[in-house]
Amino acid sequence: ISLAGQWQQEEGWQIHAGLANFSFGLLEEWGLVTTRLEGELSATLMAAGQRVIPDRADLVISGPDFSLTTEGEQGESRSFHWTGNDLQVKLEDRELRLLAHTLFQDGSVAELEVAVANCCDLRRQDEMPLHGRLEVEVKDLGQLAPLSGYMVQGRGRLAGRVALQGTV
Image (cartoon, rainbow, N blue to C red; front, side, top):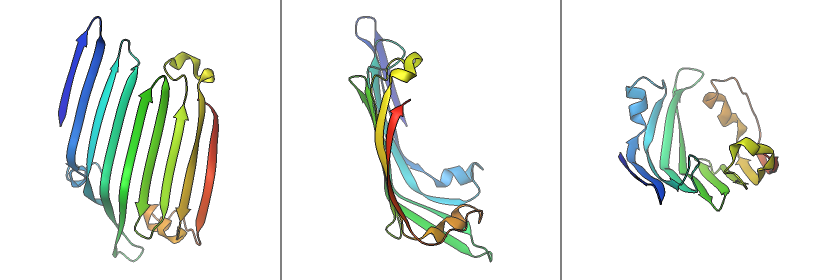
């Protein structure tokens, strides 16, 4: 874990933070989750500005390989694996852009892209246009059952693209 920052009256403030190789297994050891998690997370954050809301920022979170093990209906262990888990958030020129991606073990994929303009004044959310897209391809909806504690009993496939548009 690293954290650095500075403030100068004329130039404003900046912060740099980083998290390298954080083990998901620690969450189970600390008692925060009950399922077995494996993999590592790395993150970097840079933000700078003159006032409370940053003028520019960049956040990158990456968990290249992530897996969890849960109990099946008959008490057997079921493992699930994701790769290419990335989240990027960038604030520049009063526009916030978010990109997220994940790939499931059977080739299912989810991608999210969102952009919000005029996002430096949170008091005027109706003047913050939002647009983006969500693309999902789930090759086997039956995989949702053990991931949801068997509350969702899906069958078949799901593929779609949702266009996002509006204001915050």
